[in-house]
Structures are given as structure tokens and as C-alpha cells.
Image (cartoon, rainbow, N blue to C red; front, side, top):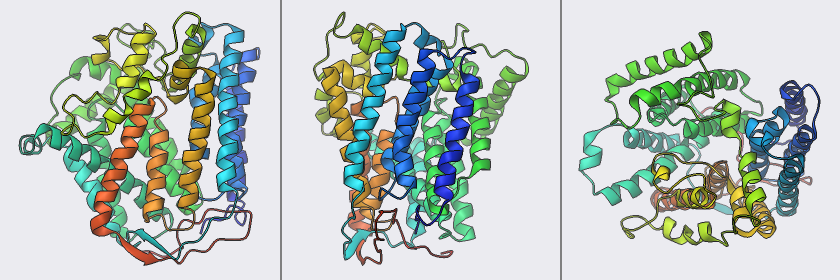
Amino acid sequence: MIDPKANPLFIRLFWGGAAVLALGGLVAAESVVSVGTAAGFLIAAAAAVPAYLWARGHACGLPIYPIVCLTYIWTCALPLVQGHQAVQNYSTGDQLTAAATVIGYLLLGTGVWWTLTASRPRVPRAYWGFPEARSGVFLTFLGCGCVFLSPLPWMVVSLPGTVHSALRMGTLALAILSAVVLAFQWGRQQLSMNVKATFAGLLVVYMLLDAGGLIIHGVAMLTFSTAAAFALGRGRVPYRLIIVAFVVFAVLHSGKWGMRKAYWGESPKPFPGYVEFYAEWVSEGVGEFVSGRFDPTAAERPQGSSVLSRASVIHMILLVQTNSPSQVEHLNGSTYEIIPALVLPRFLSTDKPWSHEGTYILSTHYGLQTRSQTLSTTIGFGLLAESYANFGWFGVLALAVLTGTATGTAARWGATVPVTSFPGLFGFLVLSAFLQTEATAGVAVTSLVQGTLALLAVGLVLMRSTPNGERVPERPACLELAPAGGDA
């Protein structure tokens, strides 16, 4: 089992990460520490509180909420610390208001989450899930995900469009979930060498196919999720893998603008073309760095297109707070009203809105885009900015309570059963939904519902009731995901 209290590694990891972030923040900060810089550090401190509580063993289950909170370090804290250009367009008072909003949201959500995860969970006698040794099931799901991402003509022509779309989304959700579970089992040393090799190969193929559309955010999130799952299973962070991944994504990110200019909107390439395609992409990205041609202010690139700038959402919070309700009225739930229609499969609702409809409503409401412009470019707002745009401060409070309740309930439900159980897998689905930092509620809920329905459908066929061998340690509660085991 993973016992943060018994293993001091989690505490060392927490303080080590805090030191690195503090040092990086000081380096990125302006020569004179501004009020915005101080506000950024306060956001980072608030975001780290749940991780500290979990690392000390004071919270049970998957660290869903702690991981979600950590994303606010690079989406909200670091842009303030480094003086992001979009942030500097607002007054110091506006920046402090936005920072206070984020801090209040994080602390209130932490209180709700901790209330649910600090107490001892009840141990069920049995759980519904996959047998832990059946890694082949998850490899199959990951392989099916590769098939649906691949440019195979028969995958398009053999199924009606609406059925193909629903099946594709469900399969991809299961594929991502399978990758996370296999990474966790790898960390727990529960996979044989053959399974490890197959998993690594399929994961690389999946990522190459997914990034072939020149949108790398989803692949970056999958990399982060699998690395986190491995770290939870092994009890240590795969530093070398993370460093390599960061370098690769930095190169791809810098080169994607030139590639989009050349290939955006083209049909999927045949398999042999991927080698040449990625060779050109890497060459383009490396060339940007080596020749010094990378200019985020170039006309063909959005302003501030560095990796960190692209991740920022604090400027969207500033946008909605400075405009609503003084200049632009609150939406009063307009982006939430469409959620019931979004969760219906398209073959049941032919006029179903697009999953990013909430984002389009926000963009047009605040004058960032016209309706026609949303067809080619999507501007991310994030859940917090969306909540304020709809209901102001009440929306922020409601979102904090909802986030803490959802993540805390999911973590508690899966705390005393293996990760291959339905509650354990559902916890990863919840984590995946909240990790979409730029998404609105419609996107998050849709992905969660689609993943859950796909998991239920497969579970009815392949899952079975299994006697529970888990135990719950004495307080403080700790993470009890699966019994440790050797190679399968």
C-alpha cells in the first residue's frame, strides 16, 4: 500500500517541489517584487495546502483534489509572479481581487474536500471491478483507442456518423483511463516485462496519433496523468521521464505554429507519412530555438505563446471580473443550461450543441470573438472564470463547494478498494475531467459522463464482484488503493 505517514518520501517530495517552485518563481519574477508577485506566491501556497495534507497522511484515497489544486500554480500563480503581459494590462487592485478570488476558491474547496477525506472510510466486503491481474483488458482498450485515432478509411465509412462519434468518444475515454491504470500498476510492479513493453509501445503510438492534429494539450495532459499514476504506484517521481517530456513538448510547442501554417485543416496522413511529418515538426521546433526565430509576438502566433503563457487562465478571471457586472451583464447560467443537451449522444439528439458551446458563449459575450471566429479558434476560460461570468461571487462559492464535494466523494469512495475497481477507475475519470484547466463545465461534465457510461458498459460485461482484501489503517487516514504485489 501507499502510506504517506510511514514513508517520508511524500513529505520530502512536497518540500522539494515547494523549494523548486519558490526558486523558479523568484527567477521568473521581476527584479523588484511587486504586489502581483506576492499575490502569485500566496496562490501557490493555497494550492499546495491539500497536497501537504495528503502527503502527511491526513486525507484518504486518490489525491484528486490536491492534484487539481496544483494546476492553479501554473495557470494562476506563475503568470502573476512572472508578470504575464496579459496580466499587466490590469491594475494592481484588479490583480489582487483576482488573486483573492482564486485563494478563496482553493481554501473553501480544501475545507469541503478535507471534511470528506479526513475520516476513516467504511471497508466494503466486496468490490465490483476488473481482476487485478487482467492487464490485457486495459491493453485492449488502449489499442482500440489507437485504432479510432488512426486514419483508417473503413473506420469512417462503415459506421453512421453519429454512432461512430459516440463510439469513438467512449473508446478514447476508456483508452486514456487504461493508460493511467497501467501506469499505476507499472509503478506497483504488477506488470510483466512483456506487458510493460506492449503498454509503452501502444502509449507512444496513441500519443503520436493524437498529436497528429497539431493540438498537443490532450497529449500533455495524458503524459502528466500517467506520470502521476506511476508516481503514486511507485512512491517516487519519474524525474528523467518528466524532464524528457518537458523538452519534447517545448520543441513541439515552438514548432507547431509553422506546422499549422503548412498543414492546418488537411486530412489525416497515412501511417508512413507520420515519420516524415514528425521529423519536419521536430526540425521546425528545434530551428525556432537554435536560430532564435521563435517570436511569440509574430503575426501568425497568438500573443504570449510560450508554454507557460499558453497555460495561463488568470487573465480570463481578470477579464470577467473587470467587465461584469459593470459593463457586461452576468450570464445567469447560460453556459450551464446547455449541459443536459451536451450529455446526450448525438444519434439521440441531432441538434446537439458542440461540446465547447459554453466557451463560444463566453467568447462572444465578452467580445473576444464573433460567432464565425469560434469555428476556427477556441479561447479557453476555465471553470473559475466561467462561474464568475455566470453568477459572480455566488458562482465562485458554489464551484468551490461542488469541486470539493465531487473530488472528496470520489476519493473516499475508492479509498479502500483496488484501483481496478469501479470506484477506483471512476476516481481517475473525475481527476481527468477536472484536469482540463481551460475547459468550461460543459466539456468537463461531458467527458466525465461519456467516460462513466463507457466504463459501465464494459463493466457489465467484464467486471465481477470480488472479495475485498483491503484494510484501513489507523488514523491519520492514508491512501489504500491496492494490495502491493509482484510482477503479474
